[in-house]
Length: 215
Image (tube, rainbow, N blue to C red; front, side):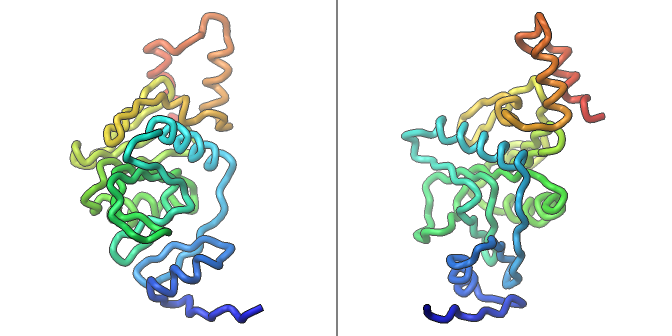
């Protein structure tokens, strides 16, 4: 067995980072020379990511736009991240392991990543010329935040009973579809409500109530 090359994890070139990542058992993101190790994710995190990736994949079947989950990197200048989900149209990158022109980027929030997703990543993602929507999804409560370029990156929030329109890919899905199989208090109440007689769907009052579950 050949010896593995040694890397200086205090600072690293993009080329060395990409080489290291091919052989690493742990994912790392790249912050302008700094290496940031990624922690594991919860079942609810994975359920949300896979549900949305499936919905996007089915919708974009045969289309020029292509969805990717969290094993493909996104390069923004001297930064490389692993978005939970992204959709790329007219990919200009010739690199096999990262993309550069997403129209949609999704991050599922957790305690360990929230600050990074809401600050550094939000700022850098929104600087990408091709990006049309940045989406942040809570996992411990039901809340889908969509920031659209067409709306000056203002936040719109969606809750149980709502439908979310992803304008960048012309897809409309219900919040309940995104949170399919997720086990948190909001979804438990939602499921129990639907199981009661006469509750085949949510009415307008229940849609509003869904937004108030976490208050």
